[in-house]
Length: 171
Image 1 (tube, rainbow, N blue to C red):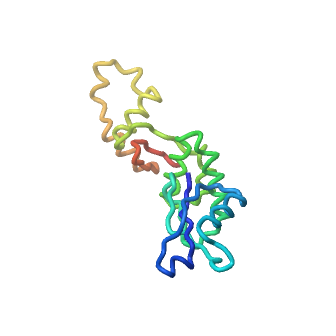
Image 2 (cartoon, rainbow, N blue to C red):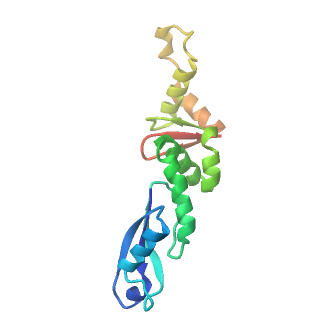
């Protein structure tokens, strides 16, 4: 989701905050209707973006961002929104400095660990997923040091913990 607050610049300079939230992507016709509602006309021709909201960390919008470019970005985000885990991966990659396009390309190269608050949780899931302890008697499995194994995993990989409790492993 990407929303912008489009504001009438002339009215703003006169001391009035006249604007409207616009959910992107938006068609040219819908955008023109919004501009009419906020008073963009032959007397007040200029607008700017006063605020924005996005589901993805790292998306940057400034007051004079190009709406066509933002629409393209919103379309890409909309395609990903069907799979929340993909949004998690894109968000994690962007937080590590990848561009949106590079983050989208990395989706298939990343792994997501659900409900992990630290590397010990990641290590537990990894061991269970790979079956590393399957051949060890159950009464000895309790002695496995998941905390140390998780610490070692963090040295060898790039892990990003998200606010929703998931961890993305970036390759």
